[in-house]
Length: 76
Image (cartoon, rainbow, N blue to C red):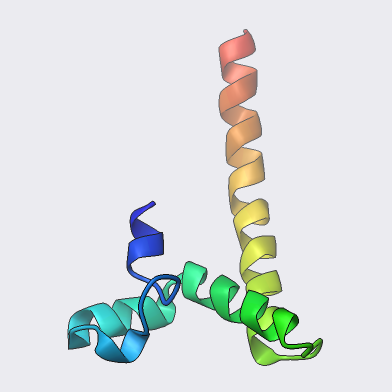
């Protein structure tokens, strides 16, 4: 939830204080919002969509094994 507040989902990044602007530009939610905006205007091949897909793949690669490890430990 806090990631959403420090992204361009609610306000433009340009209106944020400098430190929040820096955080918002590396925030994955910002890339997701930009990708959705690009898709809504009809742009299929944009950099934001590519970045969003890469971020989603990285999250799955990192957290899926961790989740399985914790889940299997609780089952024993």
